[in-house]
Amino acid sequence: MKPIRLDKFLADSGVGSRSQVKSLLRKGAVCVNGKPAQKPEMKVDPETDEITCREILLSHSEFYYYMLNKPAGYVSATDDNTAPTVLSLLKNVPGRELFPVGRLDKDTEGLLLITNDGPLAHRLLSPKNHVDKTYLVHALGLITADDLIRLESGIDIGEKAPTLPAGAKLLSVKTNNGRAVSLVELTIHEGKFHQVKRMFQAIGKPVLSLKRLSMGTLLLDETLAPGEFRMLTDEELANLRA
Image 1 (cartoon, helix red, strand yellow):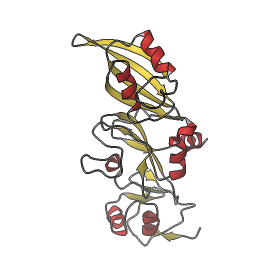
Image 2 (cartoon, helix red, strand yellow):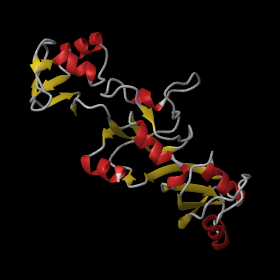
Image 3 (cartoon, rainbow, N blue to C red):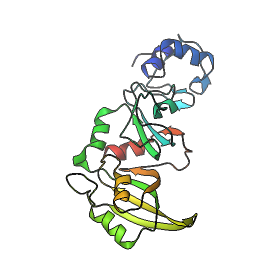
């Protein structure tokens, strides 16, 4: 690839518009081979130069992949008039037309993949692929052995068919204001609307809080605080694609 202007490379990488790129350069947010770069006309070779923006390594790539530890209070959408979206947590990062892969409820926390790779998102969300999703569930009430069997065997949540068999493990039971609160690890293989909450409602143990731990091979990086994100590693992306 022939050398190109730094501002064109940054704009093509989805960092922002030409005016936003110039602002980032003035602020010293862009480095080329470890050194701050402030001249928009500077020539770079995307194949040999290491270019970062806010310490995120850029590539002259069409697709970008971010792992977000979604906090409560944000909606999994690209635009919303009632609440902040998860994309508002990833301002000025590389990648055009980013979107969340699937939905987590506004009050649900945990792993959320943000990308602009439509084909990969389709594969992960397609019902026929049955991609595993694991959640940490705080439920009101004592989860019994019978409850676990019902969750694992498939349960009627008001759809045409029961849920697919799931994996359910009781991790602990604590008392809160005189009432039992059960901590359950639940793995489902589909993605019906509000599925986890509806499953626990069906056994009479409503969900108090919900956190997604994994999606397929992708595991939540527990070093990420709620609201923090990072790019996927090459290994994570390769496993996810496989």
